Image (cartoon, one colour):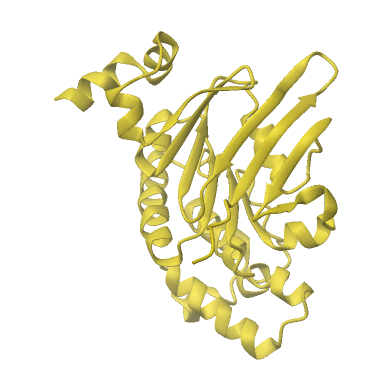
Length: 252
């Protein structure tokens, strides 16, 4: 049997924005098929890490590998078309229908119209929106939660193995947010993508993650399952950052 290649690897990565290193000789391996959440104080390097995976940010030194390939050797446009990306400002095209929005990347890759129609239908069903009702609508006719679901469907449309999510649910009301968190967990049980999810919301990170990575000042302080972090915090910082009330809840 072949050895499983990690979904993403950072090897000795250093990134500097001019006021000191955000990351220095940074190493990280992200396994395939899991939801991995990245948390930490503001400015700890969460979004920098995410954007290095699809080359929106380039490191000063070191290498970032996606499924064993160094991203610096790949065409950035092709790379981004093969990685799903969901952000807080969903960025749906207002003049395009929901169907056109979802199918834009496979359409750019030259897939057949018939296949695109079928893919859109499958994805709308997967995210719990009736294709007949929603495919011809425009973004302004949808609620925030529905638009964010379309953002997730669009990220899945070219069938990437890796999806990057940067605070994707933070602009939603609490009820929509909780609903989408539950749906994301259920969805990934079906589609088994590698989801790298940056969030400021600790409850969200612990709820959806197979694995949590806690950063501080560009260094990994602790990584493990949510239960690992709550059962055996590596330091006082982990305990403080996660909050005493979460440890109390966990021990009840």
